[in-house]
Length: 191
Picture 1 (tube, one colour):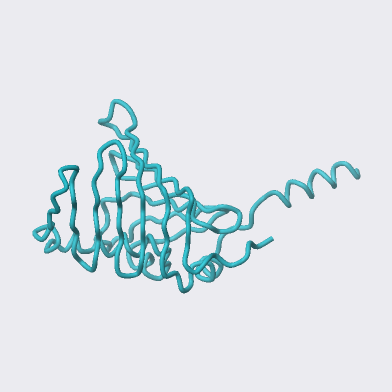
Picture 2: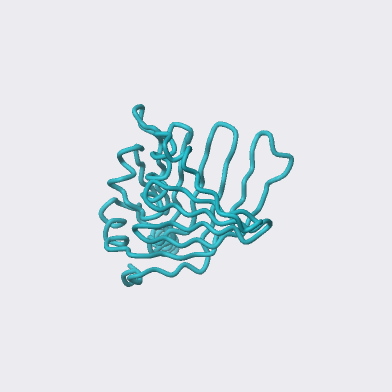
């Protein structure tokens, strides 16, 4: 009986507590900047093989920089409702026409909200379901972002964002965050 009690206690202790909106708000309150190396893997119905990219990501409340390092260098900058893309040729292209599209404006606003782990902002577009180490977001019927079927935010035991899965009808993109640096640093780990 003692052995069974010990095994049960160890199993329960190893299971992470479900994430809660309060916990995530506390962990990301006051976030001024976040930088990370990102491994992006895209797979889809029409892809022969998954496609991998190496990314350098930088977030501040007013600007998001998505720098693809490999296989082909490019930089996408979201600032306000503007999107600028600089290709491998080094030429910047203002995506002004796209920025006027309400769907693009909603997508840019959503990306900034997602990267800040702004739960109140995410709830404008999605219904959120909280589980151990994961939050699953599914679009609301009135959402401008129905191109996504689901977005899965993955967290470690300390509620730090470790990755995202972006799922559409034909494609899945997994973003894995590595070497993340935050300002301010995250609160002390919970135990």
